[in-house]
Amino acid sequence: MDPLLVKANVVKHTSLPKSLRPTSPPPENVPKHKHIKDLKLRTKLNRQAIHAARSKALVEDADLLLTGDAGKMQVENEMERTWRIGQDDIVQGAGQEAAKGRRELKLDGGPYRSRYSRNGRHLAIVGTMGHVATFDWQTGTMHAELQLQETCRDITFLQDQSFFAVAQKKYVFIYDRDGVELHRLKSHIEPTRLEFLSYHWLLASVGNTGFLKYQDTSTGNIVAEHRTKLGACHTLAQNKHSAVLHLGHSNGVVTLWTPNLPHPAVQLLAHLGPVVGMSVDPSSGGRYMATSGQDGVVKVWDCRNWKGAVREWTTRGGGAELEWSAKGALSVAVGGSVNVYTKPSIQTSHPAKAPPPLYLTHPIPHRPLTSVRFCPFQDILTIGHNAGLSSILVPGAGEPNFDSAEADPFENKKARREREVKGLLDKIQPDMITLDPDFIGSLAPQTKLTTAVNDTHDIPFARLPRLERLRVQGKADDTEAVDDDNDGDEGDGDKSGKTQSRAEKEKRKMRGKGKSVKRYLRKQRKNVIDPTAVAIRAKLEKHREEKRVARAIEKGQMEPHKPSALDRFKRP
Image (spheres, rainbow, N blue to C red):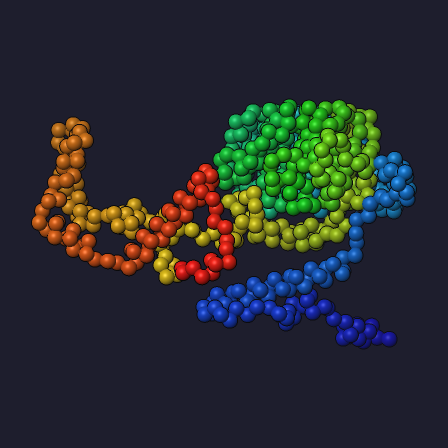
């Protein structure tokens, strides 16, 4: 049979779902906003409502199409425990492709730190002695390998695997995929930790000088430079939901920073000793933060309420390195082992300082353990230590479904270029980084006290000039404004330059107020009754009375009014 006819028949009898068609009709039950008279505003609101309805339909289709789910280890009876299962058993039970994630890299020049790219395909490693390498860990293709012969403390990819930044002994250096040095950032002095905000194209660093610096990698400008005033910092974490940076300091204080605030947005005392590990949970939208201190305590905090730790427990071996996975698994590398805990036990309050139920553990004899990183879209945990790197399998830790528009592990060269250009065009300004990302686009709350009368919009009372506020309250003398301006030259122009006494100033201020014209105008003004001013005065008096009653109730001088069935007959 002709293949063209087969293709025509397939195309004829194949169609996309209605919600996925680009020219599909709008969904049903969409509000039309017919009560709005402004045509431009009504069209805009209708377009937004249709877009929201289509997005909801697409989410429902995605739940049907994305059938992949993260599977965890399960036990057959209550006497068995998942942490008793070793890596050899997990590798035998996993598939052939998944088993490739279990590997040991023995390297000299450690201890090592690692960082994955956004799509989880590429891995960058750095050793303290200056060994730097980037490669595709799935195919084993080496991109670049450098021997910098100086102290290196951290490494991170930029917008993709084409560029990476290294925190070296004195400055931050940027290299391309082939290992060629492109930039030397002299403004970042003695950096210890690096983070890259992918949606804002900002490279953030903190170092021994105690300064947190943001640099725009698209323009090269320093966006913000904050002095923490807490000494050298060796702990830095990023909230990927809100792009807020979390810093842990040597006095046990944790601070949260944004580029648009010169002071910490949040500051709390988390530990009795230096903070050595910190991570934010990406699965909960950045709601939970885990910290570990040199005192050997691991704490889980609720970022919506800083009254106290949700869960805390003690570990053996001092400070621990922490990392959350995409599915909410918390890895704790301390001493000579790596422990993994899962939800919801680590987010549930417990009166005793007992560790939550253990999900997985793996011993590593090479101390110290300096970094832990989960691979995106994979059930792989990479641990950096003194002898190199070790990767273990953690079933159920990775996100099984990926969005190819955000991070595609299988993208080619053309797709990478298009995504880079699109990301640069959609770059978010640093001023939009806040603790609550939902604040952007919301409406300002209506002020309680305004000068509006009869439901008419007017300037709020607090924003009025002082003379206008006095005029609304009926305390302004409008007839004296002209004479005060005329007498200004006479009052200010003291040729002798001597400071006038208060009595002389009051005497000069009262000059001319007893004139017949002034008295006549003052009488005319008192006889005029402005209904708008009277309504505003009544509103102000009512507001003062409400504040007075609330203050009396708070002090216990008055009992609060109890609602009664007869209140409906009261006149307004």
